[in-house]
Structure formats: C-alpha cells, structure tokens
Length: 579
Image (cartoon, rainbow, N blue to C red; front, side, top):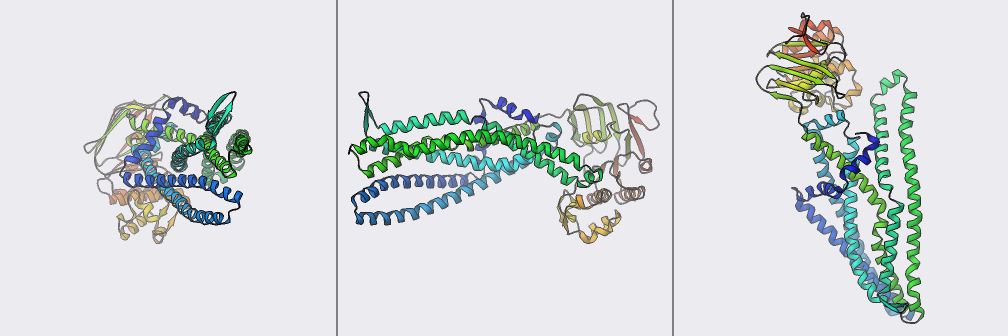
C-alpha cells in the first residue's frame, strides 16, 4: 500500500464499519482466558470512578453549607465543616490513588494480551516476511509497540471517562434543575433554566470544536507514520554503519534523514496551526464557563431569592453539568489520537488477515524421501516470468549445485522451496524429515554465542563438548571461550565468520536435507572447501542443494544444473530439458 495514501485508503475501507472493526480489536480480550480478572479489575475501576462522582456530589452540598456559614459568620459550623471535609478528602485521595493503580494494572494486562496475539499473528504463516515483500503496511514495529500501548490506555481512559461523565451529568443535572429555579422570558416561564443554559452552551461548544479540529485525526495519523519512518531510517544507518562509512555516504544519508525529518517538521507545523486554533477556542470556552453561571444566576441572587451558599452551589453544579456536557470538547485531542491509532491497527490487522487468507499459488508439501519440482513457473511481482516449466528431481543423498547468471532466479527457486515466494504456479514436493536453510546472510540473534549457534533451538540443546567440536571444525576456535558471552554477534563478526558460524549451526542440527543460498560467498576457497568437507564427513547421507557461482564448488556436488533463459538446463545440455 502506498504510504502517502494510507490514511485515505483506510478511511475508505472502513467508512461505516469503523466501530465494528474497533469492537473486533476490543472484545476478544474480554472473553479470553483472562476475562475473570479483566472484568473484576474493570468493575473495581468503575466502582471507584462512581465513588469519585459521589464525592463531587457531596462537595456540591458542602459548598452551599460552607458559604452560608461564612455569610452568617457561624464559627462552630465553619469548624465542623472543615473537619468533615478533611475526613472525606482523605477517603477521596485513597480512592483516586487506587483508581489510577488498578487502571494501570488493567491497561498493562490488556496490552500484554494484545501484544502476544499480534506477535503470534505477525510471526505465524511467515506473515512478517510476506507483508514486507508485499508492502502491505509500514512500520509494523511501531504498530505493535506504540500503537497497542496507546490503544489500550486511550480506550480505557475514554470509556471510563465517558462512564464517569454520564453518571456525573445525571447526578448534577438533577441538582442543577432543583436549585436553579425558573425564569420568565417574553412571558414564558422556563423551569430549571440553568440546566438549559448549560445544555445550549455545551452543544454550541462541541459543534465548534468538531468543526475547528476536524483535521487533527488525519494529521495525527500522518505524524505517527512520519516519526516511525524517521526512526527506521536512523536504525538503518546504525545497522549499516560500516558500509556507509566505507562508501563515504554521509552526505547522502544526511539528505535522506533531512528529507524524513522534513515530513515530520511540515506535518507538525500543520498540527500546531490546527491545535492553536482549537486551543484559542477551548481556552476561551473554558474561561467563559467560569463566569457564565454567575452572570446567569446573578439576577436571582441580587433579587434576594437565593443566598450566597445557594449561588455557589448553583455555580458548582453548573460547572459540573457544563463540564460533563463538554466532555467531547475536553477529550477531542485524545479522541483524535485514538482514532488515528485505531485506523493504523485496523489496517495492520486487515493486512495480517489478508495474508492468512491468501492461498499460495505454488503448492508445496512434504512427502517421501526425494525432492521433486513439477512444472514450476516463478513470476516477479511486476508480472514478468523468471522461470518457466521447471522440472527437477533430487534423490536422497544427492548433492546438487544450482548456478546461473545474477538475477536468473536461483535464490528465488530456493525461496519457493522454503514457502517464501508468493507468485507463480506449479508444485514442489519436499522430502519429509529434518531440513535446514542457510541464507547468504545468516541471522544471529542478540544474546549468547551459544544461543546464536543453536538457533532456532534453545542454547542448552547441545552439550558443551559438541559446541566446541563444531567451532573447531568450522575454523572458529577463537570463539570457544566466548560461548556464554552476550553480544550483538551480527555486528561483531565478519561476514566470513558469520557464514562459518552458520555451517557450525548446520553441523549441530545435522539435517537430512540442507539448502544453501550462496552460503560461502564471504569465505575464501580454502575455508569453503574445509566446511563443505566437514558437512559431508560428519553428516552421512546428507542431501545438499547449493546455489553458487564458484567453479570450486563443483567437486562437492554430484550434479550441476544451470538456469539459462528462464529454464533449468543440465551442465552438459545444450537446450532446455527436464532435469
């Protein structure tokens, strides 16, 4: 998906279905294996939120009694009310602390559950690989780490805030209706007129807020993406520091990073302008709300119909009702950010679902003891054909060398055997049993060298003696004393050492079938010969499929097949034929 059009594309895709899609993100947790603790925590947090509303209602009555005591200069009532306030305040503080604590506990538990589910979905069926190749989404790391964090915290904040607001609105509306009295306008008596003033005030404010801040949602979405893109570019510089330094590529990288930050800068300025307009309005709206109830209630006070305590109670009740009705105004920035986060998670989730539902065009199954490729066609993403009508059979124990010009499709054929190539048609039957792929650039996880050697198995799978043996066999004796050292081995070791370590991994795993994609390209010929011979000597009956260019590899393989003109050709054949 084109990144610059992602927001509009998602908006088009989910228009009319947004809340249904969000519900599909929310609901599974609340009926999962953790539902008991989740509902208990939610009920506790809601209960403490309602308790805080009760405190506010009580404080409204306290205002009336307190200001009446001040007006009457009743010191005994004043002292009693101060002590009463101290007791309730202590309870209110305790409730507020535990409301926050339990909310955070629920948030992190929900985030842990969602994160684990997204880990599973992203890693299963090789979705992480296919989504990168297809360009379905940008920055999945940000969506799993930041977006899920924001989603859980903002969702709970908005839902709990809305519940508290509704209960508070009902409670204070009853109070405001009762204390505000009625007013006659143009001969018409309006009961509970302060309530209607608060309602009109909040409705007008909400409409204007939505109109002024409507562009915050797409701008927030873009800001998150631009920030993630810049962070990814910085990580790329770190990962490829040596290559960039040797190329003297600093000016190019500066230009690239400056361009990335330019998008962050430009979009942030747009955010600032919209936020400035919105803040002008909301700040003015909030300041006017302080004085508005006094202005509206003043005629009754100066007419002697209410006392100072009742005036302050009306002001407090009006403030609560107006504030509750203005919940949308106060929460608009949070809602805008939440909507942008939901859009990104929805598109990410949909991309994973689409990948799961995508039926592979190339049939790959494990059966029997030999490798068979039947009428295989491999296509590039742009529709161009790479390999046509390929037929290949490799018996158990054979060692096959696959060569050809760069870009002819050698590595692509291996990817198809590894279920990684999505375009084309045909059938591949892989032999059942232990198999291992060695790519040109091995993956070495950050951790101990023992863990890197045994990957993807745990580090304690093999004995110390076995680790020592394979390191010696693969010409890495200088690493024996560092087996338990934790490090970033992919940065620390040279490309040749990394490839030799991958051979050591193969010796440990002892597969029946080994698929190697130019796995010795960074080695010299002497190391290459020693390591191939170690494989043949230490793993009897090993079947090997090697992709390589060097003629020195031929002596380690019983067969040699080239890819020429999009066809598999025997080394001595002059025309395309079945192999």
